[in-house]
Image (cartoon, rainbow over all chains, first blue to last red; front, side, top):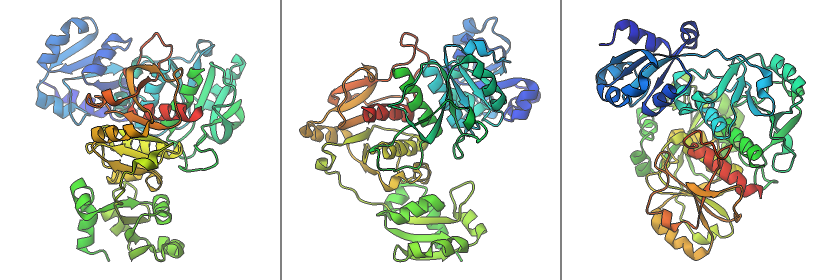
Length: 254
Length: 254
């Protein structure tokens, strides 16, 4: 039977402040929890139906300090999902240290103030699909450990490392790596026609304001996804996750 | 002052059944309503703040039968948005008839049971960006006149025509156009390497189930967006809107 303390803890992890204080986040559902169990994440607690437990007990041996079997109605009480799915876990937020040397020869993403949790989760899936292992964000970008983002990553959180940094400092420091920093801009070069290296950094900006003005001078090249036909402007802009997908696809295609 | 009948009407347009019976949909906000005013849509009603009216009266002359100035608190009552934005309008749902000849030489999208209103809106923006004018959906695809979808299209609804049809019948009938029908499949051909015509149809399937089994035999080619590196599978799938974006970008790049 779920304790009140546990219910309170799980509900409290909806807030970034509480997550950071506790160093914990929530993940739910068969598929996502299975991926968390296979990952490097430290799992503190699993609440599951007895059926889930029976099917998964061999995998969770030694992976979790506390496992509790609960009823469907108890799961309903603690779940962040509209349709709760058999299992919820609490895992520890990892402390990744950004080591610029790890980024050498790789393509990484930088996110400047991406606000929407859905976009953030989708961008992690895109990164995962295209083999991008590192995403560096400023502190005002959506928190990847927000339960909505965690669910939207659909497991990509287990493979993609997300760092929160002062972007101006970080971008100045990676200049020593001699890898290009690309950004997006409606006035940038046509991404289909310009040269692209398969290493470096792609900076994506805020949903409505784009890239912060202090970061623009730190870009090596500005890129633009042309609309079609080229001379006929239609939509005002592409959603940031959509633009990220098209740009990553174009880098990886070559 | 807003009548109770009007409030009831606006709120009723959240339901597909009511929208279809009334033949009406709701759109909100400065930018979107400005695009609706410039478009071919028939506008039946505008509720706006007096400030919006003063700034826009010259544009709405002859474009709307009934204009009502309302207070911010009245707008709060009728708005579907978390942060209402000065203006809400009711417009007539257009009756487009699918004329296959209009599709000749063009690239069009077919949506098979895309469920999420956010995905639907995003796909309209992608279509608009890439100059795709026609989207043909089956009847179980999210209704484009759902207020959430309308807002998510960010104006693309004014330029992209959406049709609801029996897809099997429709796909059989367009075979006579001799244009390829492309679909997506994890077992399809690598989209970066296979030949693509800049005309035809791209069929996108349901978020979790993909393309319906009865439609697969009607495809001329199945396409796949490869993950990177190619030999290492990571995320299980790309979101349908993300896949649409990457595929449309690849068609338009060439």
